[in-house]
Amino acid sequence: MADTRWLDEREDRAWRGLMAMQDGLSEFIERQLRTRCGLSRADYQVLAHLSEAPEGRLRSFELGELLRWEKSRLSQHLGRMQHRGLVTRERCATDQRGAVVVSTPRGRELIEAAAPQHVADVRDAFIDQLTAAELETLTTIGDKVRDRLAALTARDG
Image (cartoon, rainbow, N blue to C red; front, side):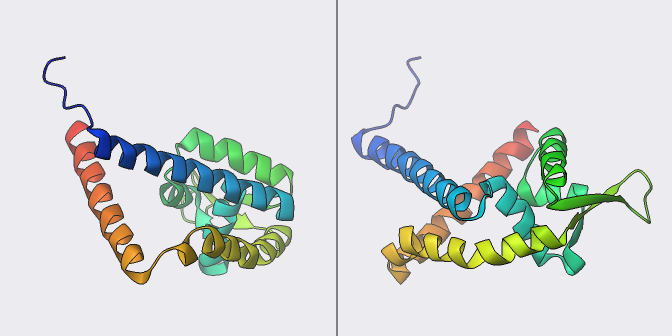
């Protein structure tokens, strides 16, 4: 591929550094959640979205969109969480084909216990390591990349 624009040393260092940082943060957060609360990162994400929703309830498709998960992944994970007593699924009153995911008292108890520790871990490992200017730059970069990914998805979708 003669037309390939290979990464130069600086670009390669930035790309690999981003990947290593992302992997390291994900592993650290996952380990902390499992050790302290018995939750996976996916469990935490589901419960966090439900805790922010009115009455701790979201339609399945809304939750899937928030998580950016495929329908099958969401269904399988919710099944595991339901088996553990963290969520329930109810028929939607306005659409009998749809379901509503509801946080159980146990699920609410776990997210309320996990959230302060999770935020402290995010601050310690990430937020507090950056200056205000670095956080602003990171936000700008994230917005730019997400916008580009949306355009590429629309083009290829």
